[in-house]
Length: 156
Ligand SMILES: [Zn+2]
Ligand SMILES: [Zn+2]
Ligand SMILES: [Zn+2]
Image (cartoon, rainbow, N blue to C red):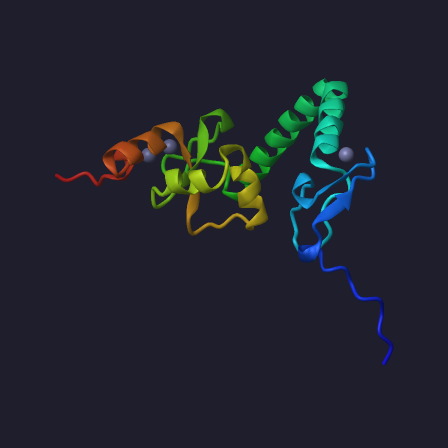
């Protein structure tokens, strides 16, 4: 059997050479997201400079891109959930929100960052068991009274 060269055990490496500034720095000075892979080849301060430079250069583009991609995701999410309030049928998107059926929204939002919520839904294939579309009215009523007045059966 042919043995390839032994892969570097990155957990044992203490120093790394930044390929940008050429400094030999402690391994903690490098971003390292996935411990099974080598850390970034640029040190943190070089990475930070790079990001700042890119942002300064692409300011408008970056915010605009974020904005339109967010709107697109919103639209996709609403479509996946039926495009209307599941309680009263309101269908104007400005009125609609994604509702946590079991009112565990706060906890869930703490785990995710609010902005990532719609992305999360998409990544998870729009789980229908926990989420639905409601309009602000029905959503508010539900969170305050536990049930939307629309759902209350009229007793005579
Ligand atoms: Zn560097
Ligand atoms: Zn409604
Ligand atoms: Zn309602």
